[in-house]
Image (cartoon, rainbow, N blue to C red; front, side, top):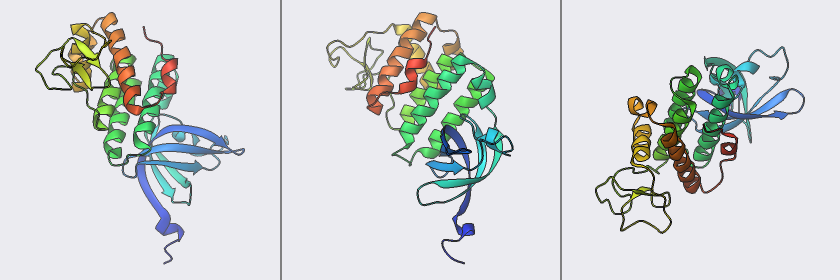
Amino acid sequence: MSRNSFAVRTYRDDAVVLRTHKLGEADRIITLLTRNHGQIRAVAKGVRRTSSKFGARLEPFMVADLQLVSGRSLDIVTQAVSKGSYGGKIAADYDRYTVAAVMTETAERLTDVDGEAATAQYLLLVGALASLSRGDHAPGLILDSYLLRALATGGWAPSFTDCARCGATGPHSAFSAALGGAVCHACRPPGSPSPAAETMELLAALLSGQWAAADVSAPQHRREAAGLVAVYLQWHLERTVRSLKHLERA
């Protein structure tokens, strides 16, 4: 059998749709985060036609079992079986939609170069989208928990108790995104913010998945935590997350 034959180039994988854009009159280019093959870009032919059998399964935030054929620059989607129909419920609510957009943009940024942690990032993103679609917690809390965990998975785990620079036992009253989170008085860079103790506790709860504590947090601490997460995210990604500007923080 030829190494370039259709059968040899065919593979299957679970994937979450990060984003799509139009190609020609009926096709789409889809950016996917797969469970086993990292981030890929593929063409879904004919999915914009009303007669398409799997067009709805390849919308943003959907999770599907895909069959693909490897191509020179873009792979081709030949089959899609739904595994997580999260897109409809998320798209129907503006807060959930904007939160999901930040999640998928972040996942795309974190996996476009480093494919080693792609499986862990895939599982983290799918879990967050599922929780968001079910309304398990406030959308903003789900987002900040996801962002902190995604960054930790990518190698930028923040500290919210001991000093991120010297390791001095905390808690500490200052925060530095550049140094990795909480910092003691001796390590604190000039101008570093001093979050409320409750905000730092909330951040630690979101990172570790202590939802009982996070769900009863006060609005002012959620707002302060969200601002620190956004700064930490964009510092370590070294670029702006464009979808953050669409978030409406209560």
